[in-house]
Length: 127
Image 1 (cartoon, rainbow, N blue to C red):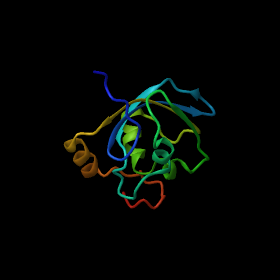
Image 2 (image 1 turned 120 degrees about the vertical axis):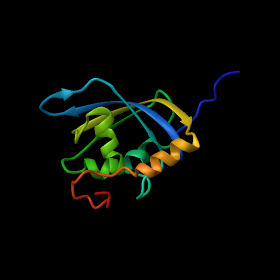
Image 3 (image 1 turned 90 degrees about the horizontal axis):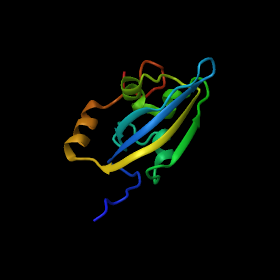
């Protein structure tokens, strides 16, 4: 029996490889990042919207204008920085490496953590 292939939708545990591009330093090596899709306090972020319906092996590239990073990733800004060290890149190449149904306790933990944007003034209310 083969493992079912999932696409990204609400309450899925999503694993990604990220490469951040910054004008002065070039692009970083792929860095893993895992999150639960759709648990943010303000709803789905633009980052999440771009991943919706995609599956393992697919990639998305974000070109991020100065000052738009927090708005783009929303509540995922802090977990992104903590897991990857990435903060406010000029671009972000995202490759999906795994999509599985999240366990109930993982969803509850993600919702309790709440995630929030850092003190960037984006108005997410998570400060």
